[in-house]
Amino acid sequence: MRNILYNYPQPKEPRYLEENFRSFNDRIIASYKDKRFYHGSKSTGYGGYKYDGRWKQVAENCIELYNLNDNSNILHINCDFGFLLSDLKNMNKNFRINGTENSYYAMENLMNNIKDDVIYTRPQDINFEENMFDLTIVLGVVYTLTLPDAINLLKKITFITKNNNSFITLATYEDEEELKLFNSWTLGGNLCLKREEWKMIFKETNYKGDCLFVDSNYLNLKFK
Image (cartoon, rainbow, N blue to C red; front, side, top):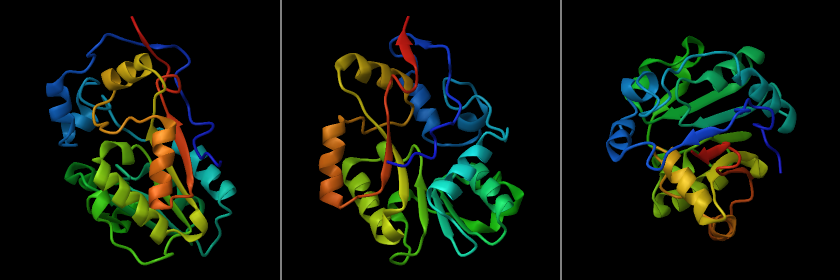
């Protein structure tokens, strides 16, 4: 299983949480994906979202792991400000770069070199041709949808991507402690499922691309 995030920086020290670390009102605010989500407090989002170069290594991983070349067509669904797409474009001007985003605030704050490459649409509403992309990237998106929309999106990813060259992240847990930790941390997660349940969805959607299962251990979450 290929993992473009295998060397993406993760916190070395535990993130200590209290139960209900984020309130329901925090989740309401985050759902707008506006300035409060990107540049507000950490209880409602990123707590400051800026380019710091960390996506360059991920871009290099994409190129290496998926054998991207001058003719490659790349899609990043819900790309935020387009940091990863911007780095990919800087590494090879011949890449055909495509992004989608469902936040007007993010659309207004895209990196300059990819402003014309990103369209506004919800993830579940994407509409592209069959086998259009050599790599489709979907980070932190699928598990924020309803079950029907997640199934629909995975079917679409399979349809639009050549040779199953897609990479997604999914929220998962194996026991109640892990589920409580994830639910206390997440702002938009609707589908935190067991791995076997995700695999059932893969079978239903014929999804055969790559995925990273993100759980409380991966995020280094612990209760105080």
